[in-house]
Length: 121
Image 1 (cartoon, one colour):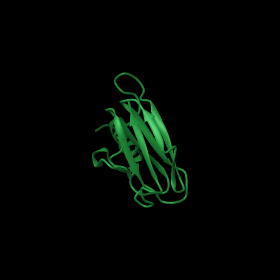
Image 2 (image 1 turned 180 degrees about the vertical axis):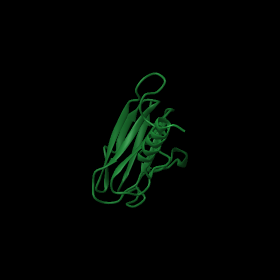
Image 3 (image 1 turned 120 degrees about the vertical axis):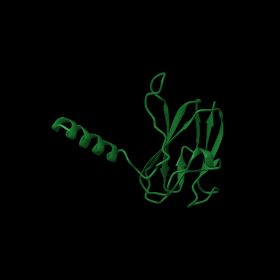
Image 4 (image 1 turned 60 degrees about the horizontal axis):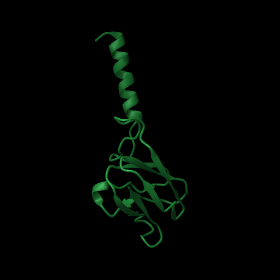
């Protein structure tokens, strides 16, 4: 392997390592086959989702961002969607390819205190 190939291999390993995170199920966002993917945002504040109800179109992503100090997670009623880990910072993104109503809550604080819905048209 020549020097340029070795350097290229090291760069690829470093970049791939930097892309890791604790949300192994995280789905990619960004350009899709027909252009950029639109994203809707939800802030996870101390003991609440803001906003708690979101609308999206099929194929759109929703990103939850931890902005408070308390640990929280995003847990969907439909486990096939995938859930976030419990944490105090970072983000979590899910794409919704089909129409429907998708409810979620924080298992740390319970459905009656912290819940939300994504309605996909």
